[in-house]
Image 1 (cartoon, rainbow, N blue to C red):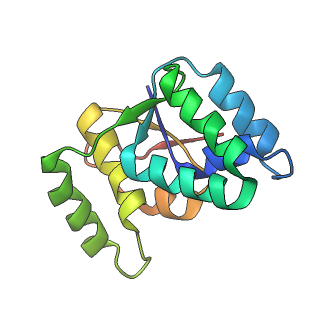
Image 2 (cartoon, rainbow, N blue to C red):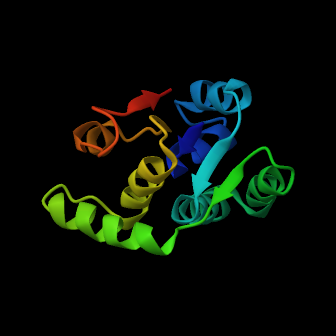
Length: 136
C-alpha cells in the first residue's frame, strides 16, 4: 500500500515539472492500492485545476473514478492524531493535509509515502514504524 501526497499527483500531471518522470513512473508501476487521503486529494485537485486547467483536473477525477487511485477518507479518530501532530510539529509547521497523510498511514499500517516533501515527512516520527519510506 502506498499513501500518496498531493505533490506527486501534481508532478505526474505536469510534464514541465522536474519530478514528472519519476512521479508518473511511480504512480503507474507501484502495486495497488494507491491511497490518497481526502485532504491531499483536495489539495491536488486545486493545484492541478488552478495551474494546469480543467482537462488536467478531469484526468485526476478519472483516475479516482477508474480505481487507479483510491480516496482514503479522514476517519473521526484521525482528527485527534492530526491535531496532535500539528501541535507537536507547530514550529515546522506541519500542515493539516500532511498530518492527515501520517494519520492515515498509521491507521492503515502503511510505511511508504509518495511525496516530494522530504523535509516534513523525513522529520516526523510515526507511531507504527521507525521512519517512513519516502518515494520516489
